[in-house]
Length: 333
Image 1: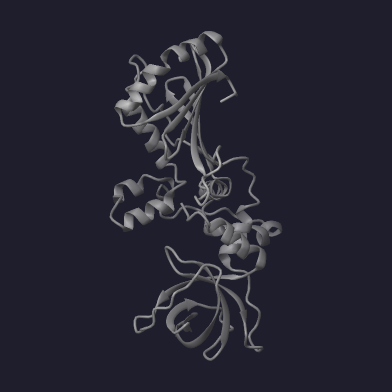
Image 2: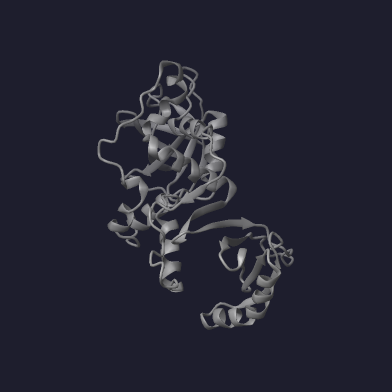
């Protein structure tokens, strides 16, 4: 996935019609300037090294960046630092040369603007497998194996493809693992949709993404914006499950001087043959794990209460400290 602040940065670019400029250090540069997010600096264009790619001196550091064709050597441009990692990136705020034409909305910004108009109520990551995660209907699921399959299904959903690419470059993920994600499931010559004349202006920028992947890209952007992901599918034959992962504000104010860091929660929903509708919410903090179990049926809640100590002991054996367990009516977790 993209870095956490990428969506807000790119949305700002889209609204302000600024050009996004990833950079690369020039091999002959000797300066080591220090940049800060949001910092505005001036760049002096030195020379064009290839069509549309220029050497630009910024704070005594020589960088290479792609610029509008209207700019030329000797022009001075105003830049703003938009990101530091994984790559130093500027936005082109303005050209200080009165002869230069105004910069145009970048392709990236137009792409995000178009994708944001696609109808999608939530970023639901659905398993790409046609069969249940645990396919042996006659045997109870192996908990460890089922958990691994669930993690694999979400990991290979395509929502985290960019992060996995970075891991691949760092040698932390194999090529075979990366090829299992939807972005690599297209044929080499996958067709693009034909655009009618009436919609060509609006949808032209989407042509850079195959139709089948456009909803997935939109899901990625929604996940960044809402900071939540949904998965749904069959965990074993004829047993559906909904799984949600989201960030939420801490329930307790941090100590004075401590950083206010959000906590992550995960929740699963099942409608089981004998227990009815049940859900489990897990909240993991630096102090340990909070478990909230919920069920519609009074008998099921009583069973959960009687088994909670055994659950806590099992988790403790696996090195997970449970700081609180509660059992509630469904929807009260």
